[in-house]
Length: 153
Picture 1 (cartoon, rainbow, N blue to C red):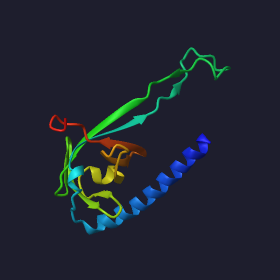
Picture 2: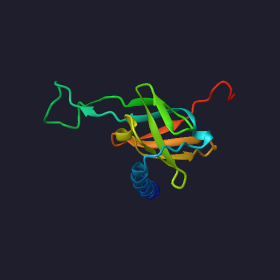
Picture 3: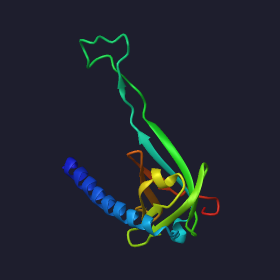
Protein backbone atom coordinates (compact mmCIF):
# COMPACT_ATOMS: atom_id res chain seq x y z
CA UNK A 1 0.00 0.00 0.00
CA UNK A 2 2.83 2.40 0.88
CA UNK A 3 4.66 1.80 -2.39
CA UNK A 4 1.50 2.43 -4.41
CA UNK A 5 0.84 5.69 -2.60
CA UNK A 6 4.42 6.80 -3.16
CA UNK A 7 4.28 5.90 -6.85
CA UNK A 8 0.95 7.71 -7.27
CA UNK A 9 2.37 10.81 -5.60
CA UNK A 10 5.52 10.64 -7.72
CA UNK A 11 3.54 10.32 -10.96
CA UNK A 12 1.29 13.23 -9.97
CA UNK A 13 4.28 15.46 -9.24
CA UNK A 14 6.04 14.49 -12.48
CA UNK A 15 2.93 15.21 -14.55
CA UNK A 16 2.52 18.60 -12.90
CA UNK A 17 6.17 19.50 -13.41
CA UNK A 18 6.04 18.63 -17.11
CA UNK A 19 3.26 21.18 -17.69
CA UNK A 20 5.22 23.76 -15.67
CA UNK A 21 8.34 23.19 -17.80
CA UNK A 22 6.32 23.77 -20.98
CA UNK A 23 4.82 27.00 -19.69
CA UNK A 24 8.24 28.21 -18.52
CA UNK A 25 9.67 27.69 -22.01
CA UNK A 26 6.84 29.71 -23.54
CA UNK A 27 7.18 32.47 -20.92
CA UNK A 28 10.93 32.80 -21.56
CA UNK A 29 10.14 33.75 -25.15
CA UNK A 30 8.04 36.72 -23.96
CA UNK A 31 10.99 38.18 -21.98
CA UNK A 32 8.73 40.47 -19.97
CA UNK A 33 9.14 40.57 -16.17
CA UNK A 34 5.93 39.94 -14.27
CA UNK A 35 6.00 39.89 -10.47
CA UNK A 36 4.61 37.38 -8.03
CA UNK A 37 1.59 38.14 -5.79
CA UNK A 38 2.46 40.20 -2.71
CA UNK A 39 2.30 37.20 -0.34
CA UNK A 40 5.21 35.57 -2.25
CA UNK A 41 7.38 38.70 -2.38
CA UNK A 42 10.12 38.68 0.22
CA UNK A 43 13.06 36.64 1.48
CA UNK A 44 13.16 32.91 0.77
CA UNK A 45 15.27 30.09 2.21
CA UNK A 46 15.58 26.93 0.12
CA UNK A 47 17.13 23.61 1.06
CA UNK A 48 17.91 20.26 -0.48
CA UNK A 49 19.59 17.13 0.78
CA UNK A 50 22.23 14.96 -0.83
CA UNK A 51 22.30 11.40 0.52
CA UNK A 52 25.44 9.86 1.90
CA UNK A 53 27.18 7.03 0.09
CA UNK A 54 28.95 3.82 1.02
CA UNK A 55 32.70 3.53 0.69
CA UNK A 56 34.97 0.57 1.22
CA UNK A 57 37.90 1.31 3.53
CA UNK A 58 41.34 0.20 2.39
CA UNK A 59 41.56 -2.50 5.07
CA UNK A 60 38.25 -4.17 4.03
CA UNK A 61 38.30 -7.77 2.81
CA UNK A 62 37.33 -7.67 -0.93
CA UNK A 63 36.07 -11.26 -0.74
CA UNK A 64 33.24 -10.09 1.56
CA UNK A 65 31.77 -6.96 -0.11
CA UNK A 66 28.76 -6.66 2.20
CA UNK A 67 30.89 -6.20 5.32
CA UNK A 68 33.31 -3.51 6.39
CA UNK A 69 31.53 -0.57 4.77
CA UNK A 70 31.60 3.02 5.91
CA UNK A 71 28.81 5.44 5.10
CA UNK A 72 29.27 9.16 4.66
CA UNK A 73 26.63 11.40 6.25
CA UNK A 74 23.92 13.11 4.24
CA UNK A 75 24.44 16.82 3.59
CA UNK A 76 21.93 19.68 3.50
CA UNK A 77 22.54 22.68 1.24
CA UNK A 78 20.82 26.03 1.75
CA UNK A 79 20.19 28.82 -0.78
CA UNK A 80 18.75 32.25 0.06
CA UNK A 81 17.21 34.74 -2.33
CA UNK A 82 14.65 37.52 -2.36
CA UNK A 83 11.73 37.98 -4.78
CA UNK A 84 10.35 41.45 -5.39
CA UNK A 85 6.83 42.14 -6.65
CA UNK A 86 8.21 44.14 -9.62
CA UNK A 87 9.65 41.01 -11.32
CA UNK A 88 13.22 41.24 -9.99
CA UNK A 89 15.14 38.95 -7.66
CA UNK A 90 18.31 39.24 -5.61
CA UNK A 91 20.60 36.59 -4.24
CA UNK A 92 23.97 37.00 -2.50
CA UNK A 93 25.78 36.22 -5.75
CA UNK A 94 23.42 37.51 -8.48
CA UNK A 95 20.54 39.77 -9.44
CA UNK A 96 18.06 39.36 -12.25
CA UNK A 97 14.50 39.30 -13.54
CA UNK A 98 11.77 36.70 -13.49
CA UNK A 99 8.29 36.31 -14.94
CA UNK A 100 5.38 34.81 -13.03
CA UNK A 101 2.57 32.96 -14.83
CA UNK A 102 -0.58 33.10 -12.67
CA UNK A 103 -2.33 30.35 -14.67
CA UNK A 104 0.28 27.69 -13.83
CA UNK A 105 1.76 29.41 -10.74
CA UNK A 106 5.20 29.01 -12.32
CA UNK A 107 8.22 31.30 -12.33
CA UNK A 108 10.49 31.61 -15.35
CA UNK A 109 13.92 33.08 -14.62
CA UNK A 110 14.67 35.55 -17.42
CA UNK A 111 18.34 36.35 -16.72
CA UNK A 112 21.08 36.06 -14.14
CA UNK A 113 22.51 32.84 -12.71
CA UNK A 114 19.07 31.46 -11.87
CA UNK A 115 18.04 31.35 -15.55
CA UNK A 116 20.19 28.30 -16.32
CA UNK A 117 20.24 26.60 -12.93
CA UNK A 118 16.68 26.90 -11.52
CA UNK A 119 14.09 24.92 -13.49
CA UNK A 120 10.49 23.89 -12.89
CA UNK A 121 9.91 26.65 -10.32
CA UNK A 122 6.41 26.36 -8.90
CA UNK A 123 4.58 28.39 -6.25
CA UNK A 124 2.06 26.90 -3.86
CA UNK A 125 0.75 26.80 -0.31
CA UNK A 126 1.59 24.48 2.55
CA UNK A 127 -1.10 22.62 4.49
CA UNK A 128 -1.05 25.39 7.11
CA UNK A 129 -1.61 28.05 4.38
CA UNK A 130 1.95 29.38 4.34
CA UNK A 131 3.42 30.14 0.90
CA UNK A 132 6.00 27.77 -0.58
CA UNK A 133 8.24 27.56 -3.64
CA UNK A 134 9.79 24.45 -5.14
CA UNK A 135 12.27 24.10 -7.99
CA UNK A 136 14.79 21.74 -9.52
CA UNK A 137 18.51 22.46 -9.62
CA UNK A 138 21.26 19.98 -10.52
CA UNK A 139 18.67 17.19 -10.83
CA UNK A 140 17.55 17.71 -7.22
CA UNK A 141 14.32 19.10 -5.80
CA UNK A 142 14.64 22.18 -3.58
CA UNK A 143 11.90 23.25 -1.17
CA UNK A 144 11.65 26.89 -0.07
CA UNK A 145 9.98 28.69 2.81
CA UNK A 146 9.71 32.27 4.00
CA UNK A 147 11.36 32.64 7.39
CA UNK A 148 9.29 34.31 10.09
CA UNK A 149 10.31 37.88 10.82
CA UNK A 150 9.95 39.72 14.10
CA UNK A 151 6.99 41.71 12.74
CA UNK A 152 5.19 38.40 11.88
CA UNK A 153 5.19 37.30 15.52
